[in-house]
Length: 350
Ligand code: SF4
Image (spheres, rainbow, N blue to C red):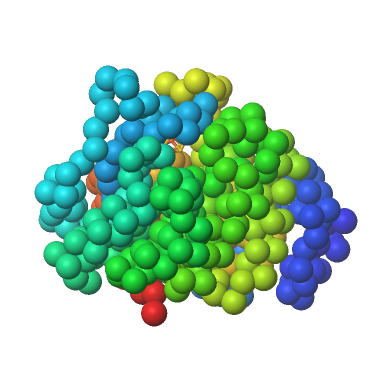
């Protein structure tokens, strides 16, 4: 079976779900690395990778979704809630720019009072103040979905409002495992998978950029992981405007209701390699320094070609992530494993 898979990868044939299931369960780590590297080389050199400096600014921790894997949220009536003002957000952006930051990702929760127009106005004000000196992801697809419902708008209408007021990007964040059984176990109030893709499609159709993400290491089954990848690949095939990148990261279990243990880095690398060989319609596969630290760099030998140097993210830090802000040290580590890191600019949506 390995020879058949190798032959398919070498000749650029699409792998089936059964192929990658077999590879995940039977191939050695070096074999997966080798397969992923062959696929990666179709798009990128093996000995270099791109990166940028990214900060996740959490503008509110108020959320009513109650996902059991989340250590970040507070319900509206609980102590310790916050919602940053425009000036407070700008202060955070200024601090971020001072340390060379390039891309901000705004990430909050399902805030029961923030309508699409509120987001659109905020993002317009940020664009007016900062121009193109930095790029930003306005919100996650999950937040967009909730806010559209709250605003009694279709996804098409919500995306149009954002776009008309200058929004350029959202992220596919909040996807975790895109499988309805998984979602029923852990975040029944968040969304159904088909609904998520309806929102992604509306966003892309409105000429707003978006991304694909996946988080592993909860209690998801292999079939649930495969469902996530299969549906994503089908979606990417089906849409004329493509998602430019896929990011894989890992669940941090500390201080969460779900709890559990972190998966080992080798499991992360194994699955990252599987993602690269299966998602043949994604040019950019991103590895997670935020949740895997220096170990995440090894993902550059498992099909990834790009990474962030993170400056902050309260969501993952509350659940146990530790951020190394010594960027030189991280970049040296990339060199040590034979990869030259090249700083890139954020992508621009036309
Ligand atoms: S993961 Fe996001 S949507 Fe879920 S509870 Fe946390 S902040 Fe809310």
